[in-house]
Length: 254
Image (tube, rainbow, N blue to C red):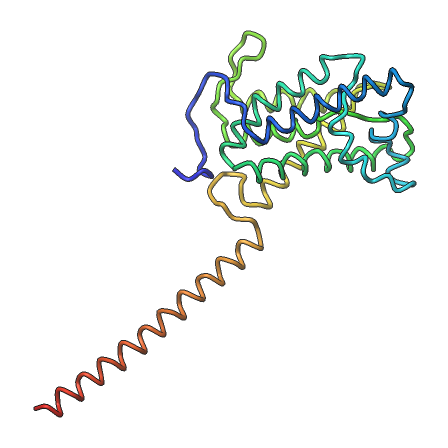
């Protein structure tokens, strides 16, 4: 079966820890330890590497759009725990489905895209935003699209992945509209899902029917088709010429 086909079966269980997911988890844990050490030493680690919209937008601190993904709240271990759990539970199947390179590309597109959207909508904010939640929400969306009938146990209740994604997206949207002064960047969650959706659409992966990569894949396919057609024409010319030569020799012998 093609790794880009769309499975509709149900599977219950825990996925293995794939190489890409494992690398991301290790990176986040290492950075978390560094945050604790830096905090004890009085360094402004989070301020420098977290996403501060005003600094990223007006002072050129664009590296924060990447580094903020790996930082988490050292005052709340549940922050990194839930993000890494979501990354493992939903990301491992995507990595198996797509391959490590494609999965990591998707992760960073969702995370960076979420950061860009949050920055543009919070241009004057001086408060650092940290966490991989935007990327994880994008992964959650992709999981619900590609594995819609997988069973997820939400607390103790079994629910299909597609409905779980709808619920989580709805909660993030509701929180982004109703919350005021919350430390959770709900807009970034929605931004991660939006970037994931657009990426799946643009790369031809939304329904899992093709390994295509948009315009690039289309041009490549047309080029390969043109080469095959040219080879066929060359073969036909060669075959016809050889066939005519054989006919001439037979006529000469007769």
